[in-house]
Length: 104
Image 1: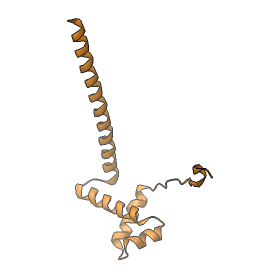
Image 2: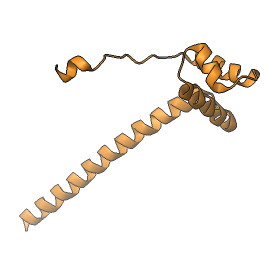
Image 3: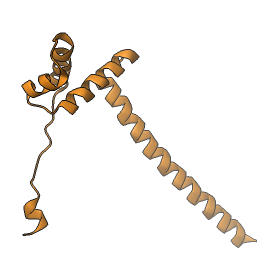
Image 4: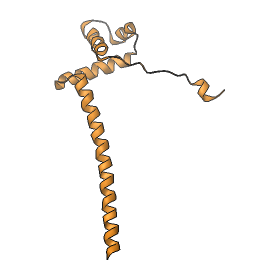
């Protein structure tokens, strides 16, 4: 049997921000444990723990979850761009040194 045959093709489920917010609200408003609320909603409990932590973090900073995610995505994009610019700068430095050496 090939390894591809043994691997199941699972697709990642994506949840809307409204669903996540409502799930966290259910945990906060009910006296039930997170694991039970997660089971009732048909999701893994670690997801609900993560969503709750994210929401607490964003609320403490005065942001929404969407604004926080957008900020994180922009930070990742800027770090990548910064790394590319550093590589280009270093290449140009080496090229300038090479041509300066050649012209002597």
